[in-house]
Length: 364
Ligand code: PLP
Image (cartoon, rainbow, N blue to C red; front, side):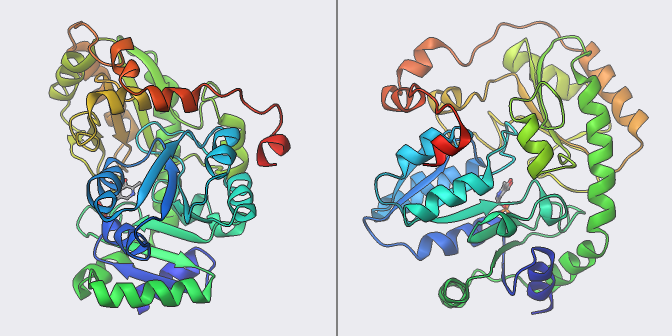
């Protein structure tokens, strides 16, 4: 109860529910659906949620459509068919794309769908989706809210009393609740959340600015960079920009592997949002359950690496990255070929719609 009250306060809501993990929180939402229901989700989202959707709940007759939610026209068209939820992740994992929450929540409301926002990467310190019209916020509290990589948890937060009651029933009925030790650790983490997120974000902004100066780095994905496609939106909706950075190495998987082997301070691990800096190779870790074609369609190449910037000394972090880049040998690219894309013709068709000219036009 103490943890739920703290989580609700952080998101500016009267109701929160704590779960045993972020995926357990996602599962509770999906358990509220029935056979025949439909969910429209961000194309770029945590691989575990994609796996839960397509490999578990699709077996029970729930259908999932993935769209590029940075394109409001695609969101609007996908919601022309009835859907229960618009499931958004912004900034997204692992490509850090930024979705216009206010516009999407408005589109969903007009078409009778509820909007869920996975706010794990942004944290309530940098982004409060309920203020922008979302119905439900999801957190993997395992990440920034816990902050020390020593607890696992999840949360759902809402202002809607009826939705809260429905999910509270499922929290109890399905039983994926957190233990008291994890609740204690998460509450302890919340005490320093504001300070940590501020420092995480400052360090990330400095590293993101310099990353493309490293040999072999072909692109850097970070909403705080001016070359990020949604930098303007991110500056309004998500000032602070968070502390996850992704970048692509020219040499594909071999280069990524050599880079990771060259690091001393950054630890290879799936998690993020803790005091220690972590690096992850999405293609073989967080998004390994997607097929190569599904990864290629999303733009997750074999040379992509994701950084979670911790609280260590920034010079040490940079020196380690510089050293690792020096140890990379060039290797051919393997992913994102034309053949991969051709394997998903129906999705390619969704992506090829002409974009709306204005935000208002897209919402309409
Ligand atoms: N949502 C996002 C954005 C995540 O990155 C993760 C895990 O990495 C989850 C949800 C799932 O959280 P958990 O690992 O606590 O089950």
